[in-house]
Length: 154
Image (tube, rainbow, N blue to C red; front, side, top):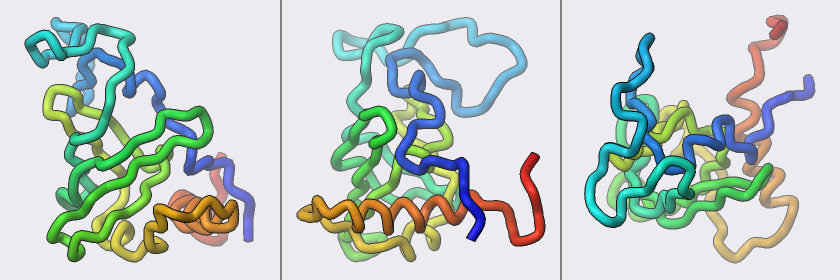
């Protein structure tokens, strides 16, 4: 098996976890409102850490549930997502590296996995502190980011 430079537990864009508006779609010009567009006393200011608990999670092909727990630890970040009725109330563990973008305006986290890839992931084990469990989950997701056999990333 070829080694991967993808670390599934590292946030690809740690700045997405801080207050400030992250556009849902990239724009060629900077946003005219650089701050979070949510209003009220609980709206975070730029640079303020944001608690992602309660944000909806969107796979590349549809919603999968809501964040029940989140960790912003460096090289150990993850989301625990309560899938509700989608897969019979099962929770899933998503490493931080699967997050494509965070949309604070819509309180949504977008991951670049399909619903089926998430459904096929190793079962979430809230009691496990075993490094082997974390390695198994990490390998499952990291394999999705490897190039097909014979193709080289440059």
